[in-house]
Amino acid sequence: MSSDVESRVIILAPFGRDAQVVAEVVGRLAPVHAVPSPRHLLDALNEGAAAAVVTEEAFLIDAGSPMDTWLRRQPPWSDFPFVVLTSKRTGRRPANAAASLHLLGNVILLERPLSPDTLQTAVEAAVRARGRQYANRAMLAELAQAHDTVAQLNRDLEARIDHRTRELSTANNRLMNEIAERERAQSALLQGQKMEAVGHLTGGIAHDFNNLLHVISTNLDLLARLDCPHPAGRIVESARRTVRRGARLTEQLLSFARSQSLVPQATDVHALIQGMQELLQASVGSRIQIVLELTHPQPIVQLDPNQLEMAILNLAVNARDAMENGGTITIRTAEMPIVHAGETLLGLRLTVSDNGPGIPPSIIDKVFEPFFTTKQMGSGTGLGLAQVYGFARQSAGDACIDSDAGQGTQVHLSFPVVDASLGTESEPQPPRRETPVQRILVVEDDDEVRKSILQSLELLGHQVSSAPDGHAALLALRERQPSLLIVDYVMPGMNGAELIRHVQDDWPTLPIILATGYADMDNVGGALGARSILKKPFSVDALAEAVHMAVV
Image 1 (cartoon, rainbow, N blue to C red):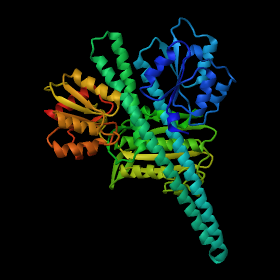
Image 2: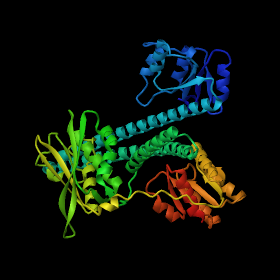
Image 3: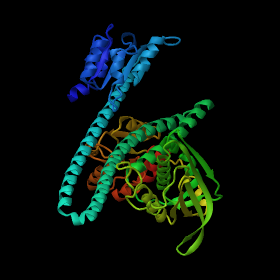
Image 4: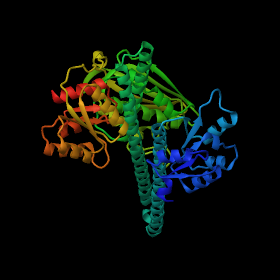
């Protein structure tokens, strides 16, 4: 199917000048195709499109109609977006209109009269969402092709093995063992490739979500600085707490999406587990109950909190897979002595247990070995428990497992505790200090994020200009050199690291702030010469402090 057809926006607005007006606004974003009736709309959808803009009075569908059938028969990757223009009304929407909107599914409602910017933003969001669906379609096709290729390789391999077995009957047993090991390695490699693809997809989604959170967080900060009534202030603070929860979720997604070195720090294990309850419940599903028994009196340990979260999540998912008909996962902490470097220390034991069928005694000693798995071929890499064991040992702790047939499984992680006061220190708020007016160039590819940073810097009293990418930034620098450069890390064409290297070659004394949503960029920023690292989403106060530290 033509990419031009798949990128177009279909317009069904047959009354008055609606279609012409909508086409003039939407045409700035994508090719448009106006149709006169719902039947022609269905024909256009079958040909391909990125989104549809329809007026409510011209487009009602009934259950069982051809349009309803088309919507229900969309492939798994597809959820076609509709932007529906409604008329201003009082009271509830008629039953047939409400049912029609329900059948459409992926709907953005815009009440007329509306501004061109509102329509343009809604259509742009719908087209962007459809683009991600097309990307998922391509990825699924690539995975299917890779699966067919591996299957063909396996068939060829089995044919050669059968021929070789007939010739070497005396070595049959040894050869069959080698085949089994080879098949396991191939399956682990294929699963690893799938997980890498999922990791790239997850990282991209988390990065986009982090940018959205940053825009929301910055606007909330700007609202908080206004002289607004007390009830509004409470609402703003509630929204800011929700944004912080979203930022924590993106950190977990980004941690899953890439490998990173351990960053040990004093961590309150109880607070960490309680903070990831929603993620755990969403991961194991509604058939599994999660019970917390957190009784350790001093749950502060020195380890990488991101890796501990991944270890707990890994163990919970393993427990879920062992309980096909549902059950209970219990996460508990308790005191225990631990021996480290020949010295007996106070320790914390973290246990993740299930009430599944348990692990047979014949294989329990192998569960921490790399590539060992009791799951069906292609359902697991055999690396999960090995990673948990390696993380525990690397964190001056240990890991062990207990299991009885029919009595469930318990995985124990033990770590030495540290001074409780280390885990209670709150992150200091950046002080508000006077900073001379700066000429600042902001380089950020996301329009909304760039706009929010510009608004924040202007509120702080600075003179601000912007560039959407690295090449535009270099042109702006040659025309007029600013006193400070703020650079996003992930940008198309030329990323932040490449731009910083170009700037250092031509303007070695220009201070630079690196803005990023990734949690492990401190070392990268330091190596590149950035004065400061701003972790998205960041507050206006954090931005002000970073500017102060960079130029003073």
